[in-house]
Length: 182
Image (cartoon, rainbow, N blue to C red):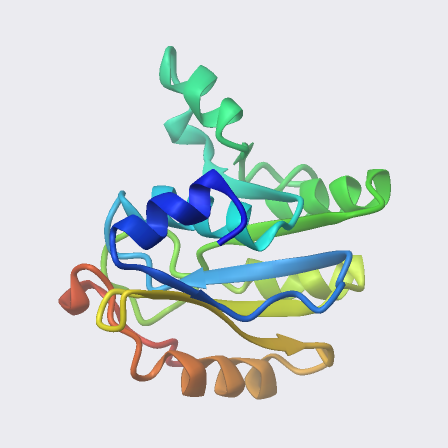
């Protein structure tokens, strides 16, 4: 563990596995996301891995004084306004930075859903960056970089790979997690 964040995770019994292999830009998906505390474990884990990241967060979380805290923690509010939705927001962010990893929970909120938001896929496609698949597995007490998907030409192929990775992952509240089903 090379950072204070890593030492905190280690003291709580968590391990960090994998890395970004020098990758400068990505859409990073982070799941299972079944509890609010996942955000903080993720923040610590990505800090330990050493990537320059921003976490996409629903704009509803940015109310005073929470907005100050969220921005300090690396969160970016996203909205669903036509022409200014999160996809275009993220593509712009990638155009402005030499190194950036956008972290998103494809399930959306922490409630159970088997219809994941496909925005992460379209962000990667439009920005021409790979998708990094990471897990926060409470069963193993492990945060891991599992796979880097470079070919984002077909959603069904990508989601099949992602579902295979997440099929055994355990969230803090396992009954709140479901794989994507079309």
